[in-house]
Length: 190
Image (cartoon, rainbow, N blue to C red; front, side):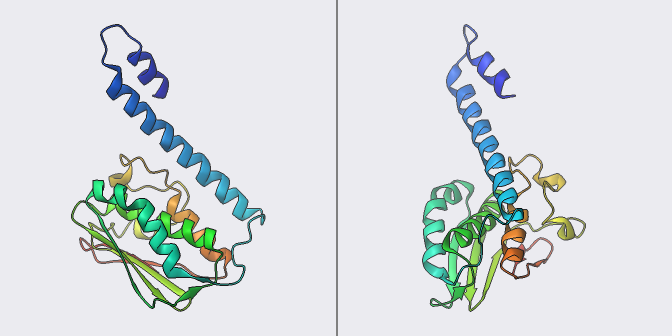
């Protein structure tokens, strides 16, 4: 697809700007996929130390949300954080940031315009929820599988690895991850 876009942009009489923008989007999706695969591989081989001390979660969540604000605004998704402001999680700051970013990007892609995504912090626990369209009962048990994408998600541009990364980070820190939902009212990941 990328080569077709670039070759079409080079044809006489074509307006290359929209084709180049689409090619940029494709390259970004490829980069995201490669980064996710490499990160999962790093987690599995034990080269990444996930749980090394504790991290005060609020500053990390706020930083990730600040970085994603423009993307969330374009998707019509509001990002909020609440709970215990001094809560700590047994993760390195980088691992916590990756976990929060993957959860937030999942909501930005799938919750739908007009929805909100909230991270609630508690001591040793993070709960991420959106009030979007939710997922089907058939999709719920498979959300943390690598490359799994529901029929509705296939056209979204995601890699199908974001929640798998969340699961692996959580497991590497000796934690658990669970997804629950109310049909038509969003998804909660604890």
